[in-house]
Amino acid sequence: MDAESYDTTFKITDAPIDNANVEAVFVTVSSVKVDGTTLEGFNRTTFDLAALVNGETETLGNLELEAGSYSNIELELDYATDAAGNTPGCYVELANGEKDQLEASASKISITDTFEVFASTTNEIIIDFDLRKTIKEEQGTVSNNFEFVSMSELAAGIRTVNGEMAGKISGSANDPENTSDKIVVYAYEKGTFNADLENEGQGESNVMFANAVTSSEVSGLNNGYNLSFLKEGEYELVFASYAQDGDSFGFTALLEVESTTGLNLGVINITSAVQINANVTITGTK
Image (cartoon, rainbow, N blue to C red; front, side, top):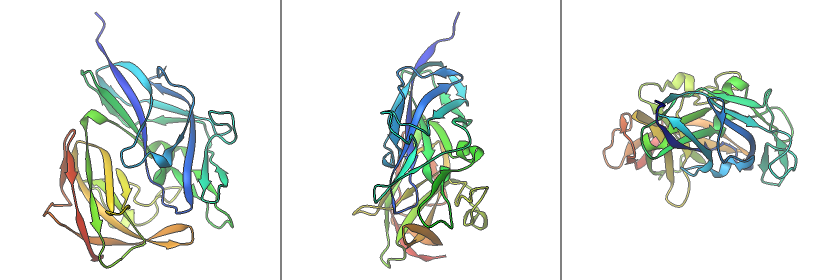
């Protein structure tokens, strides 16, 4: 007797990029496969990943999958042409309207992060394409020049989670002393943050805060942030200060913060479908 299969929807989301001159990041996905099977209902699509932040998603397609663990998603990108046939297919759009083409050494990205399909009527698998980890700006050039990171870093910068078993941390960060031009909040699995390592660029592409699960920029009238689609577990929050230098923001210091409700920001327990409110006040720099 064949095992029962369950309808599984695949969606894409993003964590933000740290550059004030970037208006949009368009990526053209020509194929999505799970364990070698193409998603049903998927059509070649061009996404503005920079718009899919703070929990926003777009649907890729569906598959009937048996309950269990999976760890083989393949995204194929088209660097040359977008879904409408225009060039290029993957690019950064700058504030002045200029397009800077994005390319990598291969077109197929193998995502090996594990996700679960449950024996239930609803399974939504979130593919988090973290722009902060997957795109780099070449230094020492007169104009903006962006590229994808190495293929191994590109695969590592994309995570997957079943949205039915994910939670969220959101809140506001009040900065009464105006310590920063920009504040970014990073979520780490408890005990994994090492300031000496994370404050420096890591890997071939010098990715900072490389081991953070996800991040969110503090923004808006309420100085809000949203850390979405967190797998069940314990997390710690790290707040970082950035100063603007031309079109870019550079890391300056880690921030001292206090929870306004007494929440222990070093041990936040996330369970499925739970939203934790973590409002803080910035008290200084470390």
